[in-house]
Image (cartoon, rainbow, N blue to C red; front, side, top):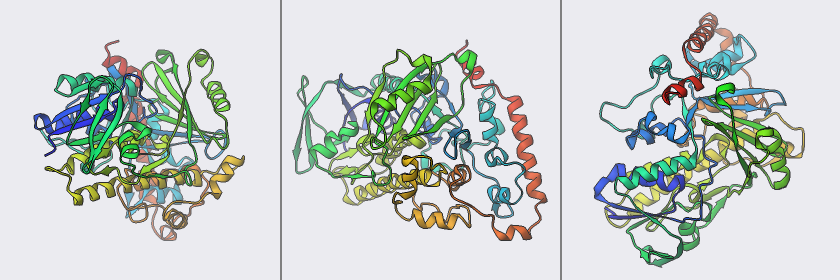
Length: 514
């Protein structure tokens, strides 16, 4: 076992890594985290996947313990606005489609959907989003009790996700990093606040981190959480970076923290992704403020123009707020584990935050690191397998995000026209051709684990409107009465859930005893 683990960099990636390793390995290892006093958390990754619950469960945190401290709220899905045309919207919820007679309710909807809104007809969660409901009743009971729970006394990872959990979280990334830092250091993680001035190298990889005031810090395994700089993995070990710019050209973002009156306006239980002239804009509702940001391509907008558009969308509340401009590195390190160094977070890889994958990448990297942790020196077989899993995951999400732009119906300016002319990664072009005759299923989406299931691809192809789809001819030969009854059941259960659940604001006010 690598007895001394040194983490370079704090922020969300560093402190999630420290927390998970401490929870996994306890006193079997010593964990030292070195973070600069001058570098702050970027904070783009304030929205998450539903799999994030495994992280908090694994490290032993209940929602009431950490959510108020991080201004966290529930995320039931993503609302896409203006991707088909201005004024149009649809939801991509955390909910699998029902199946009837071997065909998903999406297939049946093409045959006999009751309205023109696929999402509301097929998903209960879309209706909860419209009504701004919490997924929990005030007594803590989850609606329909549909989610899987870990076995008594057991801890789970993403690999055990056998059913779709109905929500994820929005949270303040800086507050979460601070919360995990205080908790981790209280449980034995050693924190060094100092600047790394040099990375020493030897035949094993990294030999030590030279700091400005604390001398050289040595370890057996080094974890690079230094963000887009890739201080250890890319700069010291010279591991090449594989760019995705050919497929995902958005390379800049500008962000604001916008205060809101949540008692008056409520709290939306979803992330909003609004299509803009040169990219898209996120709105992430927290308890007391909205995180807002414009992700764009520098080829189609200047930073000044992007900030002006963002402030216009945010309204008067943004008047005196300082904007945070971010240059994004889109792609991944060729290998995330090189010799005795493992890159986690932005140093490993990043695609634009359209599907909230930044923190998912951190969690996936940490979980797989623990499962591949060497007994002494790194095992080349385990290292190669780790790199394969991480690369496939990031590459799959690159393909999934490219699919968003290709399938969006918008073609009203040069930016959106270019999304239809750009090369598609991997086998995506072949998949899209198939999906026009047969909706995505487990046998036709990207074949390796990347966090997304067929219902996600179906939600997009049905909502974006830019790729025509057809019902399967065989459904004309089948009786649709049961499908019609199931659509009515979804409507009835949606109405019951909306009537019986509190709003997001009511639930979190209750949690905070307001």
